[in-house]
Image (cartoon, rainbow, N blue to C red; front, side, top):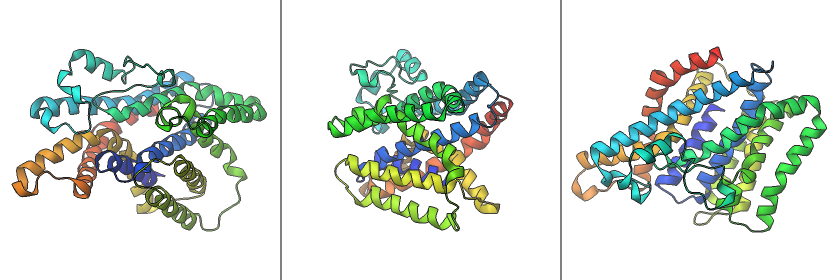
Length: 339
């Protein structure tokens, strides 16, 4: 699923910096949550099966926080050295950014003013705004070991819990409550997505054997891109996002029967390893692309915008994320493997 995760990260970059496909960013985040639910259940039923909850928590913190902190610091340095004129899509009051705001960013914006109770378990960092999506993940990580134990104790009770957690987003949808607030950013709106990923892990051995899983995976991937791209370009359609989510479920389920070996397997792992860095660092890369373009392009070609801008950011951030993985994240992996 490495390439799929990289595609999801690139969709977020495009959505933030180019726009035009309103569903891309929302659907991509759902995809991250779904894959996270599957992977976390996989590791809890494997490496951490023998009640190693504390070690599991340490492992998850080492996976998410160091990379996030690196991009917080690097982005602040870029802004300090080059000025606010290069800040793209970040809060307009970034000029008043100081030590207090920096410390708040280090805790993922947890102390940001939250007037809506639906967003209490959500942070809104200024420097890396997309990091708000880490809070639902942290909540899932916190309860995941106990959910796995619940499944071992009673599959029926686990199924009841999943059903109960599916009710809030269903209610939000039919009551036509604001999707951006309730269906997308609130914990009650997205927690079931993690659980669906978890259910895929538990049900994968009961799925019918696919003769050509690679072909099915590719067809589903193209279908997914088609749904999120061509359904609607200028508005957010909840139906579109949830139809795309169903296809994502089928993609993850079919990937459980894939066995990628050789160079294809290595490329898939590399793409998966750098996808988190691409997601976290793309605003910083956008500022750097603007600076590079200003230095290199003729005046009549400035500013660099649109599709060329998006492609340039994705390429640059892919390079930065690759360097970050091999220089920093890979070394942190050694610590994670000890837990």
